[in-house]
Figure 1 (spheres, helix red, strand yellow):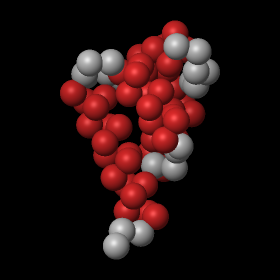
Figure 2: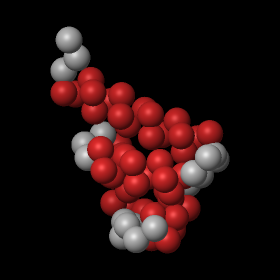
Figure 3: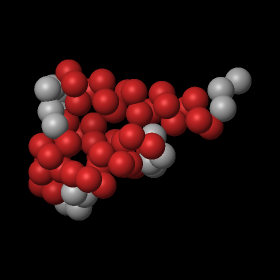
Length: 68
């Protein structure tokens, strides 16, 4: 059974992998999030993603902003 820290690490790796696939920076993600109505700045994104402590809603918003 995974610990909370392991789940957080998995979520962090997932989001970072999606950003890397699109060759997208945190600044670009912040701009795209703003475009869909989510106000996050680059330093906040960097910290939130680095910690891995974010909601499923935030993860879905990021995935939407990253696009396909």
